[in-house]
Length: 203
Length: 203
Image (cartoon, rainbow over all chains, first blue to last red; front, side):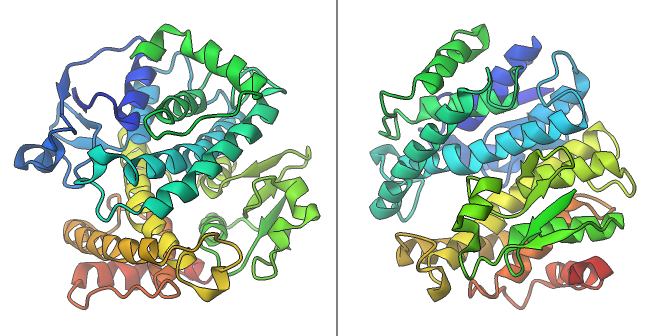
């Protein structure tokens, strides 16, 4: 297997952190989004939707979508479980994963893509008003998360899961998106410091 | 258990179709999005993020996010499997599910929310330019899907899965979003007629 990966972008980082938590390493092929390599003929043949990451299996089959790739590795390497340990926990993890994706990561990515000068070619049209509309959504969700994290150690319960990975990647990507979280979110800050101190966060 | 459901909206419909495919029925509580019932005190206590669907378990715990609810029912009622039958098939279903969500359902929902007069109160600010930017994305993805459906019967392979449910719900929601698919997408039309003729499509 080999993984097509890109630095800086949030979705490839989710897979790198996931693999680090599993203790799995595999050959990586770097696709430079800054130079629009994902739009070139070579990578378009790998993923016609022109997004990283992408996992090439030994059969030649390509799996795309960061969470699909993570879920495949969860089945190949079940320990430690990062999608939940029983039916109800897996449902909770999926719920939090999706809340984070749609209410936190997505607004942050939209704010970035529709405001950052580096995205001018990739996101057409760039709509400044849409970038601005997304910033308060991400800020409000961080406050919601703060109240939730007053009640438990991690996003989806008492163990670290893929929902924490997605939330960490989103929180860190707020910086290039020029979104600042309020200073009074103590539980969010406690959680963020804790997950950031895991070795996997450097992936 | 009981399910908080709303007519017309795409995400609650995904769960209704899923349950119909499983042959499961359960008590439903209707939340009228047209009258903004989801923003009232009663439903905000169920889901503070004010979105339907939501599943109330017998313990009182609430599960939100349509796919989390579907995944929970997949574990309670494994037959017929709608998320794939082995590790690789589950990864493929997840990949297609997410491609459909991000490249097809999301653009259609954005086009609807940012253009439809009925959404004026719910989506603030409504950004007409953002609605327009999303329409060609959904149209392009339908063309991509058409080429994929030349190669196999269903979205993710030779069996019907949750990816077909998401794609059907998205395709049908294109109408209120005022997105029309091209006439020459024969494989897409064949697939759409087939999944629309299943009894579950009426759910």
